[in-house]
Length: 102
Figure (cartoon, rainbow, N blue to C red):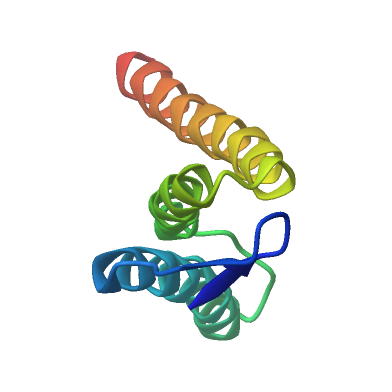
């Protein structure tokens, strides 16, 4: 439940937005576990492609929640991050294409 302090009206967030928000945070946080496990297995610091997929999926879910909540700070952070995650996936794809054609 959220109280709008401007007019004292109590607002309610539908349960499915809580699922989207918390789900996005869980997906986003899981990327660190994936990266850590991959690095431990390789015995060096690595960033697997799944890190970027978890980043963009979690980031977009959180962005949806932030837009629903009309939170400009959260929206700006998630938009910026999502652009970077998408670009990294594009670079990986381009690298694989050029590696396959070489």
